[in-house]
Amino acid sequence: MGNIISPLPKWIMKHYSKLWSKFKDKQFTHQQAEDLLKITNTSIVLSRLKKFGWLDLTLDPEDSRKRLYKLKDPAEAVKEMGK
Image 1 (spheres, rainbow, N blue to C red):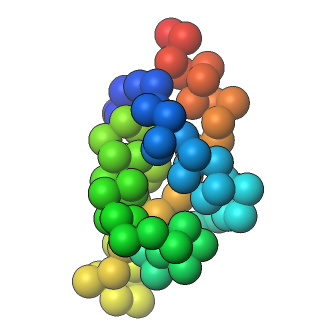
Image 2 (cartoon, rainbow, N blue to C red; image 1 turned 90 degrees about the vertical axis):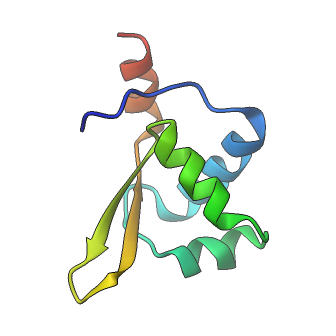
């Protein structure tokens, strides 16, 4: 995928864990993430997850203004960090 995976700061890892336990490797929307996390800075969390390589995003095929998010499997992420 090109993104180099970096260790997550603890505050982001907490949100990643919550997202992973709900969505696993399924796609989800910003709204779904916001509803689950119940925080005001969901955009920042998603942006940082992407920056650290733990999240991929694609455009919604039905509405290109919307993004779909998908988390990297934690085992794969850790394996990639070890490379």
